[in-house]
Length: 256
Ligand SMILES: [Zn+2]
Image 1 (cartoon, rainbow, N blue to C red):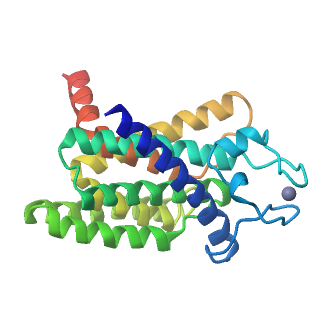
Image 2 (cartoon, helix red, strand yellow; image 1 turned 180 degrees about the vertical axis):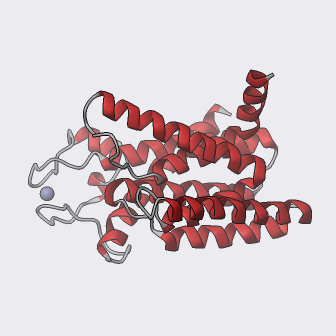
């Protein structure tokens, strides 16, 4: 078990390194092929500059060639992806669904939402193409691997969640949330189903409100200013994906 967790952690850090490339290049309209280079001096990076986490630590967060500081985005995304891959393995093993297709499916979803969260965080923009692609993959997965009752329930959850955010967007006239959040909520519904998406959306609003209050408290933000919401939707999504039933049982126990 521990050995597998370590393997998935290392695999996740490597995938996280690739996700950094996807995040940087898709937002610049570049292809994701080709060698990585330094943002400042354009020096091509060699194998030793590209080892996830280790290179950043060994180079002390500076480019080997021009000594300009490297973005903290790299080790943060690598670490988060590594942890999420380890958690994914744990979840797959615990749920008894540790088959190849389900494993790829979960890791693909995790990778996609990491990209969505970081791009929205950096650019206040949700890459809807990725979200749509993930929704289609999820639709196929549900069709072939879940019962038809659950398949239909999850489609209803997707339209329900999408409609909920559509109403918010219309009611607030697009301030704060946009069409990207609607598409993301749709994806969350398809993957999580009705119970799961309720947990995820509740957690997203809770975490978003908490974060805004903290920012206001430390005076980084004025009241009424908005923060990108996709990172919180993604956090809620991941918690609901891995621990949804646990959160529901805590919540119902707290109410009773
Ligand atoms: Zn450089």
